[in-house]
Image (cartoon, rainbow, N blue to C red):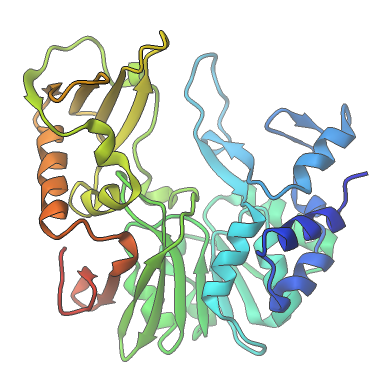
Length: 366
């Protein structure tokens, strides 16, 4: 029978489990935080199948489309989950929490991450904020069933929870476009860790140390978290945004797949903040593919047609924005900077907003 011990062993095999968090992972049963039915798994109908998923090092989607009814053929957007345990541990390692510290968690979700924090720090030192009332109610029940009682708050995580401030640490479990000033005020001499990015590329952790009203730190990792509900990126099927319109045609000599690889995509996302992409391969084994670009507001789209062996590619752009031109400009700027890896970039947040820099805070690029 699959068990919590097997999850522990899998995390140890991956070298994801540090001594500081081993006790929490071993003691907090993930099964307390997973619904009986999720993603095609049903505990009553196939308990072994359900347990195998629960005790795997995998993310488990526990809500789609904010809990609203889904019609046939409708795009389903994941809106809450139990995150991949090894990614949770990576994030907690970045947080560098110590006994006696007070932690504010943004995004309660199932409550599993909050339970780990409480196990290590105690109920009184953990506050967790959740935007969705139904998710929070379920999480509170999960936490009580597991024997944990942190302070739970229904609210917009961008505002934090000033009534409980100051905190030594803030950990956010949803992707943010901006690090709110309120977090710096509520964690004035500590550390903030959050997934960060924009619609074009959002797979980064940012780890910020806060001193004197300024937060500064580096980018790392490859996380995939749900979006902050108040600033979600665009998403959907191609058919939801393209209805046969004819756009402006041109060509490019840039292979389209080059602009969606991690390092250039990260840099492109610094200026193309409100557009997303989808790579659609042909189903005829030709190796051909289409790169689609869509504005978050649905007003503009672009395509770049890829075929093996070519050195120019057809471009079509529709709407008030020339999305491929925007992406191309940012990509060429990244090249002009020497194609820097994402690990060389950092972020500063202060009263003037947030700025991305390359190698040192004096060399701002955005």
